[in-house]
Image 1 (spheres, rainbow, N blue to C red):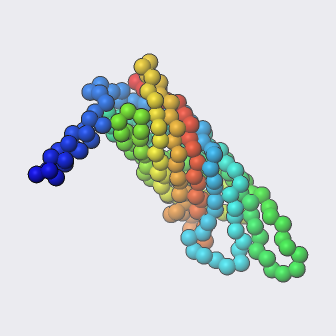
Image 2: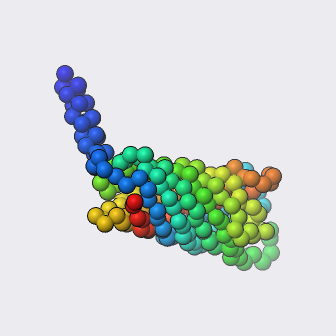
Length: 200
């Protein structure tokens, strides 16, 4: 009996956590800037003697749209540009040690995600990610493909319709390549998005 009562209390608490208000804005447009993390190229098939890529720096800028199904669930998409720099560590083949070399490339992402809001200030988001080469690096190869993105964050809604948010995230890009390449690279990116949105 005590277990049953505890279950009812927890259920009611969860419902009140989601129920911020019966009124909600169905549409949201957001802009964001992301960095403060790491970016790493890797291959799903381990190949010896090809060297490795180490994280250097990156930034992303994006524009997003969210359609809210109800006060706690929304579906989102948009477009995001990411500029990346990585350090290539050549394989050691004897003799003079090879010097690291900086490589750069750019990727456009199109996310197809869902966002779930908890209580008033917390949310989680995630879903599929389409990546398209914007500035291809011939030494790295194509990075156009399918992946996913996961995140969680904090937001604050102003009474006049604006929202500010902070969104730590993890992206895995080009896990399934559009190109017919046997040993294409995938891109892991972790960072923090800071943004502002308008609800209407």
